[in-house]
Length: 190
Image (cartoon, rainbow, N blue to C red; front, side, top):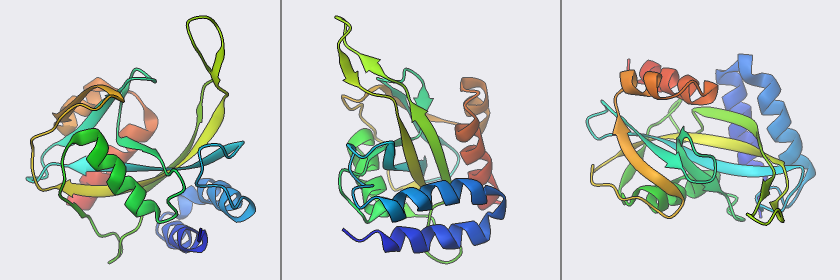
């Protein structure tokens, strides 16, 4: 498992978004200190991968109504040992949308994240009160993708998957990181 391509990618990200240096530093600290950072068992958190997916006409964004978190979010999930984090984002986009073909939107002339985030995943219990999963952090690396088709399907991990206009996204959620990705994507499109 090679952690250094992600560290290099995050270094370029820091240069592009210096105002996000503290979040970059948190993720880099995890990646440099934990060889198992791409495994979901890594604690206090682990690297995850997400995709902000634009429609082929670039007028809409694809969001999933996450089954476990019960809110509208970008598509994504666990790296599950995949250290080429852009490939993990692509895998998750395919699994959760049913779409097959995507193009990475280039950032600074290469494939690199267009957003990052560290957020806490709350403790989960089953109906009997037994612990399913302890609280932990997701160190999420997010890529901007453009879909080559529009026919989507809903995976087991979602209640729903739908295309939304930017205006609809703004009324759908007050999730800070989702709105930040929306604004970054609109800036990229301009």
